[in-house]
Length: 442
Image 1 (cartoon, rainbow, N blue to C red):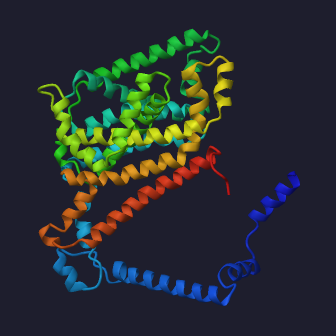
Image 2 (spheres, rainbow, N blue to C red; image 1 turned 90 degrees about the horizontal axis):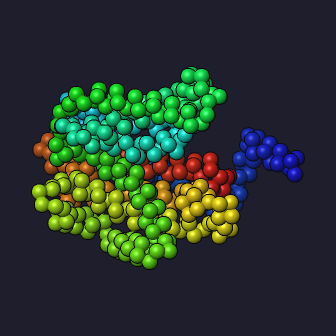
Image 3 (cartoon, helix red, strand yellow; image 1 turned 120 degrees about the vertical axis):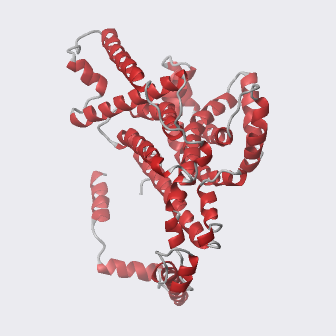
């Protein structure tokens, strides 16, 4: 058996010879007169399409111009990318103050650094890293993007975010350099490797508390200029809405799915009703209802801006769809897994968290990522209710006086951006499937 596997591996690794390539082409493309004609016609259609796109989008295109009239003077048949280039800042940042754009870039850099250890094999505690990003990053990024004064709750969460980020970076460094987690390194540093587990835990908690207190008093003096939410827009706003929706939809979907499978009638009925109500109406209806009905359920004097209302609506809507995906994954787990977990003494939450849910999530990766991709694309609907996300900004280019009537180029550019984002998510999901052995390896 090992010899057969070695032969297969050698066959896969060997480069294709010229004879095998010719044989493959003959078998798949030129095996008969009909297939030969079909191949030639298809190649001709592909050539016409690609050549036309190349001539329109690049060869005859205009990349530098002050207005659309100059584009026409340069070429009547080529694309006018100058308008898209002129609106680059608006497409990516909306009407965010230009002297404050560094805050958005810095927030994106923080997120990239925070999540970088998830792709490093030597770093431990990846689940805690992901949880810390979901739990703390929105508060730090929200204050960074919006600015203004901080109440006590926001100060606590911003401090928690800073401490979590610092611990994450330190854990990454110790993992890459020492190949141990941060807690093990700290215990070794203080010479407590032989101490009782309780003493080690108390030492770690004391150090974390001291760091938290120092950071809390340090950040109290921070003050960032206020940027009203009405100036948020472009790809930045799209990523904010979809990012919060993606981070919240999966935990919310898990809770709703467990509630729908609960043995408690009240919990099961409420969860089922909540899911079916939101799944029975389109997202645009939910968005309109959120912007008009949410204020009626709020206490008197409590006002939510439209952006917060939209985010809440998107989170609830996608959590309900995610709940059905999670429920399907849970139903695919054999009953023997539940029974085996109970026989070793695990309770309900231990069974779900340690045995059932990890297996179910691996099988749900394609559907989960498909829902995330749909969520990213569905955020363009917020332009209908007055938020200038990336689609709203792309449509606004054609209304700008120098570029009036410029429709095709902005929308094509937007399509390329969305394809890049969605294709990247799809490829990464496939990588996770292979890494976790959830899919078939080819």
